[in-house]
Length: 166
Image (tube, rainbow, N blue to C red; front, side, top):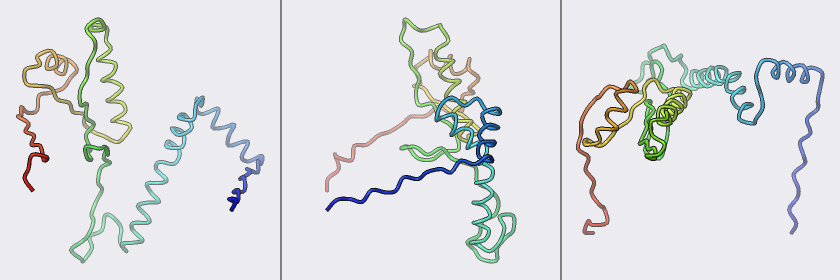
């Protein structure tokens, strides 16, 4: 049996739509699809947040700043989190940074770190973290030079689950 083709959605261009597009092109430097996504985030981000908060207020029957009579209430605001395969965190995290010997001392690590920090900030992170092996003096010096403060020294443990008896 042949599949039915979905009808093609055709946009009806109006003078109003043309004016909006012209104004967007004047206001923003749009060259790529990613630029368009950034514009939409800029234009709609606050609106979407307000809509979601209003929907939650309506669903729960009270505003986020009000306390409910039941035990399962919300009060306030939770910061955005970065979700990854390693879990969620309100802190951007640099797992590791490596530059080949022949490219060191050219600012590549600093530039890469800057891009990572900017990305984390764009994701709503208020803090950025990293780590290095206890004996990696070069990495320690780099992190300190880049403005990181040592927060802790730890020993990590692993255990293979395949070695457990059933």
